[in-house]
Amino acid sequence: MLDLYPSLMIIVLLIFLFLLYQLTIKLYQPLLRFMDSRDEAIASDLKAAQNLGGDAQKLLNEAQEILDEAKAKATKLRQDAIEELKAQNAEALAKKQKELEDEYSKFEEELAKKKEELKNSILSQMPLIKESLKAKFTQI
Image (cartoon, rainbow, N blue to C red; front, side, top):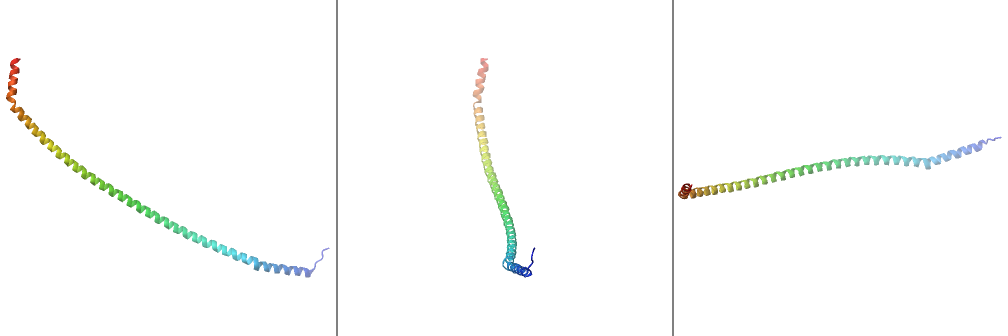
């Protein structure tokens, strides 16, 4: 049968408690400290990542503002350039219209002079024309 030795049981119990104590001191406590420090490091890293995320969002917003500002400046510059070109074109058009009007008035004056010369020429040749018409009528 089974013999029970109380002294052996007490020694085994003492060895078990001693080993449990040693494991607690040398293994479990350092392991728990490591796990706690790891949790703290993860929490601090997560907080730092959130801060960086906030900073990244802030930088992204600033970049968007800069882009919007640059677009507005580009639009204003484009509008200014268009207005300047319109003014230059209007000025050139007005100048060309004035030149054309001047040329047209000179042309009208020359035409009036030629008309007057032609009229005077015809009037000066009127007696000859009358003579030639009389001669033609007499032939008929």
